[in-house]
Image 1 (tube, rainbow, N blue to C red):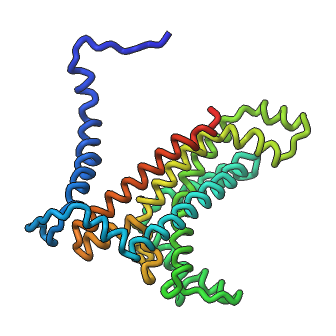
Image 2 (image 1 turned 60 degrees about the horizontal axis):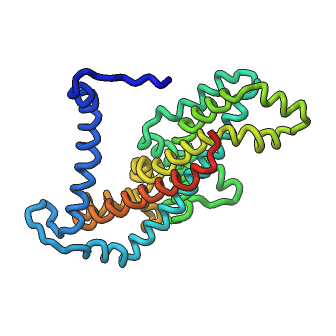
Image 3 (image 1 turned 90 degrees about the vertical axis):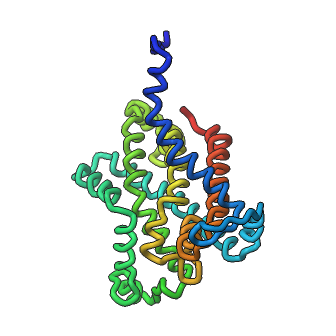
Length: 293
């Protein structure tokens, strides 16, 4: 039988929900509604004069080649960060779950990067790949690879992808390791008795049992790539060179706070919100069907 809590007073449940509802209203719905309202107005930098322009901000937005380039960069960046982050994290968690010597130290070292702030992570990778002083850049030069992300847009995009993946690996690793440890050992032993190799056991048993964890991390990593990588981009490339690393969330900041285009920046935030909501809907509507609970 399901146990349900019954309150004698009607206001007690609402009182318990009030703090969470207040946070949602103040920090999500209010800014979202304000962004939608500002997106249909043209206003000066100080917000003193408002002029209703309807959908003109959106029309200019999708007619701007720089914004369309930002969408392309964001698509490449988010896919690369999500796929690389999940694959590397799952690989590390798989080996960390095995009976290895010093596995406790191995796990601890893999978790540490999650404590590093995104801006600090960006600066660390910036120093390592500095064209003049970077250790990695000097090492690549010895192999005949000229590294200079200050003038090469592809290298700059690769650099922020690597830094973003490194920052998120620890988070993914924790969940994958917990998922692997929850798999009954008897199932794996039965597969070994039946003659299944390591790869077949992983493909037919381990990965399907990890599908709920993988789906959760897939959603989280998409959101991370769209929003939480702002500090990494800002500290490493500031969207350059030539807007080659200007992802959508950074362009919203650049146009709103640096170019002082409040209406255009609000329209960009609305488009970004719609894209993330649509991606989340697709994930839960179609991809979740393949998840085996």
